[in-house]
Image (cartoon, rainbow, N blue to C red; front, top):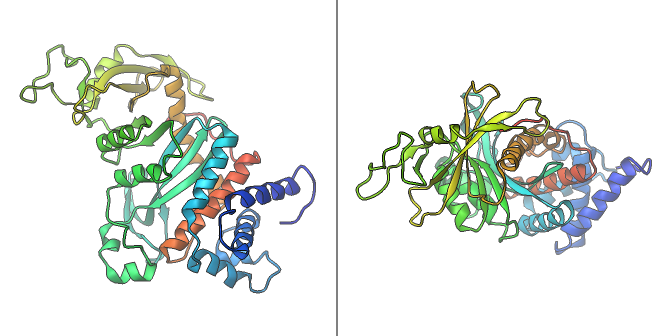
Length: 387
């Protein structure tokens, strides 16, 4: 990356050097640390698709493409220590307020990329050829960047010995639900995160996701489907009768019905950058699977005027006001926007290789490049909205 002036490319280049020196410090060989810096610089300096060929194209080294391909796809370095180092740096410098778990589909044209297959997109309402992944993002109102990734591999891949061998998928990778994959994306950082975890759990086993995150000690703010079964905290149904759906216990009801109690307490709350408020109300609930009466709060958000579909969030936070919680929900939309903008600028979804390890190493290096842009103030501002 050429150095031009203090306030522009030179400053960005210095940020790359500083970040890479820290996060690659534990790589065992100097050539690996050098290739790591080259790759991150290439992700930031290459126009168009961030393929290894295009990244190598800006290098003066004639062997750069082969060397970078080996570094990403065939080398032996472990990506998790790099991600943990990136997480420590970000939490130290950015004052992280929350963590966002973000499931995403990565469209693919071919059939050989690891994990690719026909996936249903709820947003597009049709299936497409894609990989499915979950990313963990650090988040504040002014700074978001990814620090961990997991591929969600289904049984079509994990029970096919030929595919597993070709992609070099480790034996310890086993089939799991999308919700389990999301929770593990948070947990595998060895307890480094802590704090509030946000997740859109509508396409997951939301109850299990919330319960597992709570068991880890995390505070949770999860968007949940209207059909999620919950129990009113006071054991009273919205209609006023005591629950009796289960012998000897309170009635389990859909979250959408329990939201009627929240509706009675709703008030206008502004999200960041919004011109109009949303109407927000709360009701005390708990999970049916929780033996103790662990209190949770169901939040119903309705567009201004009280018309249109409501959005339901479940939270364990009892030390934040309603207005703060509503504002925090906008971080989920912020991450989705960031993935589509700055994420594509650094090639977060551009890896075209076949190997499992290659995909993870590319995602790690692209996350480092994204962090440089976010720290440098070059990330794309997100529209103000709640998810």
